[in-house]
Length: 106
Image (cartoon, rainbow, N blue to C red):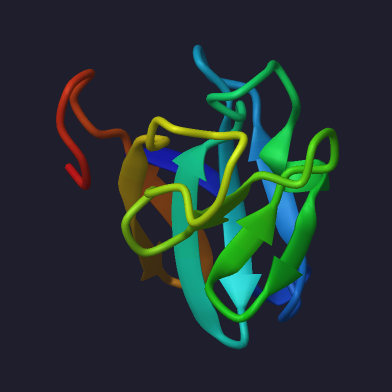
């Protein structure tokens, strides 16, 4: 379990990058928190710098889009999913539970 930031410090529609290996992006999508690997599977771009709309994030480099709930790409050029991670809030602090290499949502 990795502490990320205070819930109050991540407003709706925003994201934060966690410098783990590999990096993880945490998103506040209209009050729902999601965490995925931060690197686009099409090319090395930070998804935390992308555009968030509902439960989708669009890569800032080539407009590949990923569903934050599943990690699955929703359009080309990405073909592989990003790993998802479980998010919890404890005493007002967001925590990410890092998923196993091949699985999703620890």
